[in-house]
Image (cartoon, rainbow, N blue to C red; front, side, top):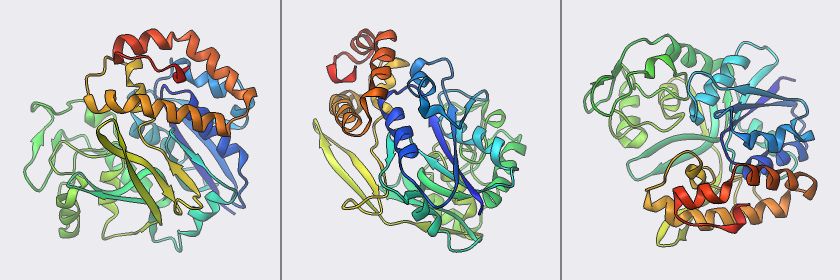
Length: 335
C-alpha cells in the first residue's frame, strides 16, 4: 500500500505545534504515513518543543529557504522533497493549530479519494467574495496530479498577475516582484494566463476577488477545476464571537459530534506579536480568548512530560515582554 506524507508547516507557535504532533503520533491508522515538518522560521526556538522530545522520532524536518514565514511556501518545499518518491501517493496538508481526533482519521481522508482522477479532498471554503476553494488546512492531495501544477508554477518566470478583472505586473504598487522566484503549487498567486470559462467562474466567485489576492492553495484548486475532481468532505465550519468580532471556532472534519480532525483557526495569528507589532484590531481583540483556548485544549490532550518543554521555551524567548510590547496586553495562559 502506498504511503501518505503528512505535511506540517511550523513557524513560531509552541503549544499548538506540540498538540498537533502529539495527536499525529497518538492515533493509529491502517494507511502507512510519514511526517514532514517545514520550518518556516528555522531560527525560532518553537521547534524545540518537538525536536527535543520523542515526538521528533521518525519525523523529517525541512528548513525553508525560498521564503520564510510562509505557510504555503513550506508546503511547496515539502512537495519538492516528496513528489518524485514513489512510496508516496498522497500528501496530507495540515495546520499547526489543529489536531487529529481519533484512530482512523487519515484512513477517513484516504477513503474520500475514490479513484485517481480526484486531485484533493478537504474543506470547501466558501463565504463572502473572498473564498471559493478547497483550503489546505486539512486536505489530502494526489501527488501525481498536483506535481504537474507545481512544476508549472516553478517554471513560470513571468512577472504578470492574471485576473479576469484585469492584469497587473509585478512592479505595480502592492505587487511582489520576487514572486516568480519563490512559488510552487501552494504559494502561486499569479493567476491563470488562459483560463477556461469554468476557471473564470471559480475566480469570480471568490477564489481571487482581485488580481493580487489568493489564499494558499487557491490557485492549485482553480487549476484543477474542470480537469480533475475534488471532494468537499463533510465539515461543520462553526463561528463564534470573540470580543465583538465573529471568527471561526473551528472546522470539524467529519462533523462536530465525532470529528476526525479539527482546525481551530487563529492559533498562529494571535502570535504575530513575536514577529512584529500588531495593529490589527481584529487580532488584538481575539488574541486573549484564542490564547486561553489554546492553553486549555493543550493541557487537556498533551501529557505533562511534553508540556514542561513548552514552558521552558516560552520563558527563554521572553514571551511576556514581547506580548506586552507588540500586542499591548499580557495573557498569563500563554506561558
